[in-house]
Each structure stands twice: as C-alpha cells, then as structure tokens.
Length: 240
Ligand SMILES: Nc1ncnc2c1ncn2[C@@H]1O[C@H](COP(=O)(O)OP(=O)(O)OP(=O)(O)O)[C@@H](O)[C@H]1O
Ligand SMILES: [Mg+2]
Image (cartoon, rainbow, N blue to C red; front, side, top):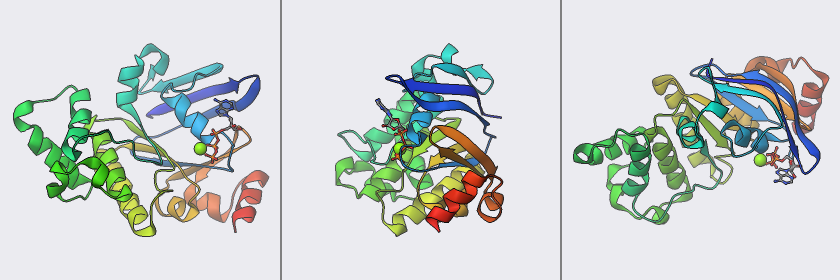
C-alpha cells in the first residue's frame, strides 16, 4: 500500500466539497479518478500533497502521516503534474536538473548523463536538452515535466488531466509512458481524466467521484462492464 486515505473531508467557505473519502492505492498501480466536472477530483488530488487542507480524516504515504512530513519532502514523494506543463524559463536540461537537485543526489560531474537518461526515458531526443523549454511543443513540454517529476524519485504521481491539452498522438505517447513508469519504476499513479478511452487503456482500478463522494471503486473491467452501483451505471449511461 502506498497511499492510505481514511475518512477525509474538505470544507471550503462553509461548503462540503469532499465527504468521507476512503481508499488505498497499491505500489505500481494506475488508479484513475473520474467523475463529473465540479465533483472534487482536483481538490482531492490537492489534498494528497497538502495544497488543500482537510477538515477531518487521515492520509498516510508509505505508512507515515503526510502531516508529519514537511510539505517539501511530501511534494518530492507525491509529485503533482498539471494539465498545462509548468516549466520555468531555461533549457530542458535546467528543468530536469531541478528535479534531480531536489532529490538530493545531485552530482555536478554526471548531471548531464542523468538529464540525458531521464529525457530518453520519457521518449524525447537528447538533442532537445539545450533547447529553451518554452520552444517545445506542449506535448514535448508535458514529457519534460514528467522527466522532472521522476527525477525526484517519487513514490506517487498525482496527474490532473495531463493529456487534456494534447492531440491524440501526444496523448498516446503519455499513455505509453505512464504504463512504462508503472512497470519499470513501480510508480503509483493517480490519474484524473475525462478521457474514458484512456481510462480503459491504462487503469488498474477506477474511482468514481460524484458530488464530493467516492461512490464506487472497482477494477477497470468491472467498472465498465458491470458497475456495482446505480451511480456508476448512471455515469456510464451519460457518457455512452
Ligand atoms: N478555493 C475554492 N473556493 C471555493 N470553491 C472551491 C475552491 N476550490 C474548489 N472549489 C469548489 O469545489 C468543487 C470541486 O472543484 P474541483 O476543482 O475539485 O472539481 P473537479 O472534479 O476537479 O472538476 P473538473 O472536472 O471541472 O476539473 C467545485 O464546486 C469548486 O467550485
Ligand atoms: Mg479538476
């Protein structure tokens, strides 16, 4: 078990946004969090790395309460990747090495080799290392942001609609990359998406969030073929 979420709720400005959420993730699992717009998916992801405070409940990462970790060490272990790649000014190499430095194992003598191998891992040509990051396509930038994330040697990736700004080809690249990271790095990945084809291709399990409640958690095939809840059936009928 990597992440364990026990009975958490989030209230914002007097409104109940998340209600008694419970679930666990396994090491090397892709857990897709789906649900209608405004259901609370992004709020839940943000709670998992303390960008959003919770009003009750407990969250453990690798057996340790995330509230006993510093936000900095938590965010190296549970790395958030967003819809729009958030690269900073500088080269692709600068951006990737930022992740390596945060990981604490930065060795200037072989930093170029490390940056090169991370770039290869995400399927980009190493000649891009010296390019200014802002000159890359959005799809390439998203892969650089994933390279920077894995440079931190995280336990878990928190991905919020990371393919929704991408064309189908780039989406496919990211899809394949996530599966590779799960298999080779044993990363746990929580993926928020509205793309049900993507969910069916890569999820191990699916969590359905409706109106702040996690109403169903099922293995992906079960969810799409035979959802166990009425709300799951309703959700599938609205997207069919
Ligand atoms: N800081 C905030 N102040 C007020 N309301 C907020 C705040 N953050 C989130 N909310 C509300 O919480 C609810 C859940 O928002 P959230 O962004 O988590 O939804 P979502 O499931 O990610 O939706 P989408 O699929 O559109 O991204 C929404 O009603 C939103 O307006
Ligand atoms: Mg959202």
